[in-house]
Length: 270
Picture 1 (cartoon, rainbow, N blue to C red):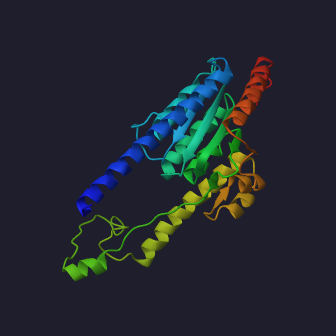
Picture 2 (picture 1 turned 90 degrees about the vertical axis):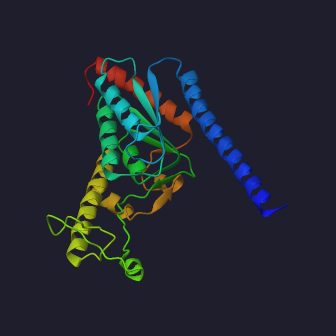
Picture 3 (picture 1 turned 120 degrees about the vertical axis):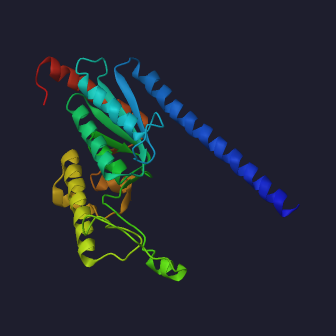
């Protein structure tokens, strides 16, 4: 077999694998939705799925902006027949701002009706940020969670540019306007400024997780060194409430929804 034919065959196989994987992911999503509908029995509970990196995009029904908007809609529907929300998360995280917006949306919704999170494969960094705002978090023993921290990175291309004989010409209105430029070395002052920004974001992250989980800030800070935890480790560290599949999370949501409905009728809610 010639090299070209071998490469072509490999590309075809990879394409088929990608298609099969995509179909399987879609089937799993549909199966989760149908399972939810079948066991809930009514339209009183809703499944919301946050799947993928948290970046500002409306491209997918399960994308972060669509999810944020739906959560905020549900938070405003106090008299709605939706009595609780199962939020399924499968996300490695993403941008700080949008993760914080999703966290806030879950908190607003939680003030109106119960929210239970079920973690599929991963809820790390921004994904866990969002999950921490819920009433309860369920994860699988092998799920990956945590990664509480903030990272910022960039490239310094000055050595490469010098080799190529290319020099930078930048015009700016202030000394820090091109901070982070890959075309020059950063100054110690710039490093200090950027690190202070990252540290401030980190403090917000830790504080919000502590608030959402009902934990002491220092207890969260000890866990927040950027590492990830398995579902079992997360349970030990109080980052989740229980281990189990989506069905267990749904059962918990049903219970919370009933309790919430009773307390609202008696005007005893928080």
